[in-house]
Figure (cartoon, rainbow, N blue to C red):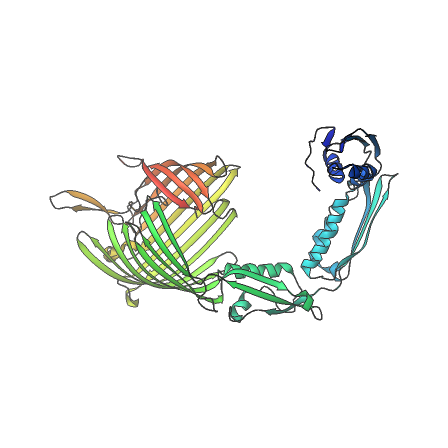
Length: 575
């Protein structure tokens, strides 16, 4: 019961028929007494009952909090039109618990699922007796039994023996669990999902002891597949036979097709418009597809991914892909056509990928057009650990390692070994303070005679909001000198076969949605033996949204001869 009243003493309430006040109490005792008394009566007939029951209600409200010997005086002034009542209370000393006896009877006595409840009940010898805590503990035992499959469980003995003179109480509680039920047959519509998918996702077998957490885990796994808008998994208690409870699984399919249109802007790729078409569940075997068309002046692209679950719908799948993309790498325009296949498996900590992609890339350097073909088998290993929010964690460590190879004897125009590694680290040394760091390493090993045959997308470039801020998107890389028509000499960025970049950023939260940042970025994309450190530093303001931070940042490439401030705008989480 809740009554909104002033906490000043005496506390008064007015009505047409009665005014009452309670004096001598404060805090929780005061609030509980007022809640038991309730609002003042509105009629002359009701006020008679109010006066008659006032003392008993005050006593019971105080006993609920362990005060069994209060002195209560009720003074009534029968004035018209409203009586005036003053209730004076001296609560006395509370009752303390002297002895606690809690017993589990039946199979639950050997069930580790009750260990925590038995080891740390919310009342101990010496505590003030509180009946709400005692009743809450009983409900917790019953709820634990229900979650663990003891559907016949009940409290068979419940006693609080109070000795008011000694201000002490003995608490006794016995819970009889009855037998523990087991999982029965899982019933579902087979036209919606294959038995193989269910078997892969199941967190229990028929005949296992019932455990509500396993049902919730299966329900969450089914929801994570993205195939369904809703999942309902219900134990059919009324159909239980011989201690076995059948389960009914109801699946509500997600929309067969969905379309998303996106409009955005980034200083790296300028304005961007995208259309994404998704089919989350093509058939009962869980096949899905995603097609994405994207346009920006620097990086128009189209991609289709077709996903096939293998041994597990979430943790093991095969992905077929096709991609068309134009991109600007430094001073090179590149057109890419790619077909790929990738198997990805997710363990408890690491994600492992095995891939094969066929890449045909065309580009032009010094008015010379080139087209090369590559067949690239690859391997990747990644892991993300985070603490706190998914998009704004207070602590995180991400790792990504990738390796690809190509061979002239296996369908490629050159022999190549390409390796990259990316790291991200977040920690919060104090409330409202956050440090974000990242690093990226890359190397492409190939013969010197094949150096000009390495496609731009396989070279390395740096610069931009996700690399070295203060520099343009992919504007940092190995450079060559060219003579233009008219005799002018220019430098063209053509990328490097090595890359090293790193960043350190300090962030301070002004509020839950705004933070400021200062940062230092550095590194280079270069050919072997030609490393030239590029540094950029600056500051920014970030607005936090459910999909990540909107980051407006100002950076200066102060390692350049004529540095100038550059604006970077991006949205999303750091990793």
